[in-house]
Image 1 (tube, rainbow, N blue to C red):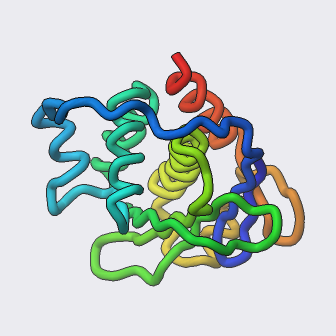
Image 2 (cartoon, one colour):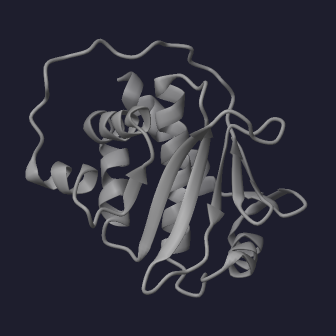
Image 3 (cartoon, rainbow, N blue to C red):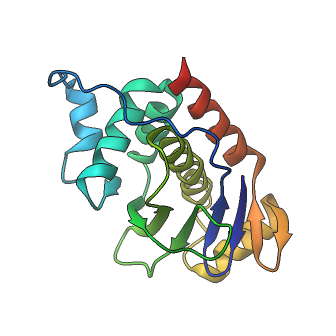
Length: 181
C-alpha cells in the first residue's frame, strides 16, 4: 500500500481478499463507549453512507487496533469524513485530503474505492485513519501546505507530493490480520 499527497494523501492497496460480507448476525449489543464512537453527534470519525458505517462498526468490533485508533481520534481536534467513490486516479484505492479549517476543528476527508471487499475496505480505512492520527498529532498542520511539509518530513516519498508512512502501512496490515483472526 502506497500513499500519495497531491493536496491530499492517497493510498494504494492491492486487492488481496475478495471475501464477501461476513454472515449477518442478530443486532449486536453496543457498549456505551462504542455507541459514542459510532453514533454520538460529537464523534470524530463519520461515514457518509450505511455501508461505510457498517464497515466502521465491523472494524470497531473485530479489530482491537482499529478500535484503539477510533478511540484516539475521538480525543483529537480532527474530524474525519469517510466516503466511498467509484473513481480515483489510476492505481489508487483510497486517499486522505485536508479540508479548510472551520472553528476549532481540522477536517479531513477519506475516500475509498467502492468496489473493495469488506475486509480490504476496513484495512484501508484503518490505514487512512492512521494518517489522520499523524495529522492529529501535528498541531502545526492546519492546511494542505502544512500537511505536505509534514509528509515530506515523516513520509516515504513515492512520487511528486506522493507519500506513505511505515505506521500507516503497519496499521493496514495489522487491521487486516485482526479481521482474519
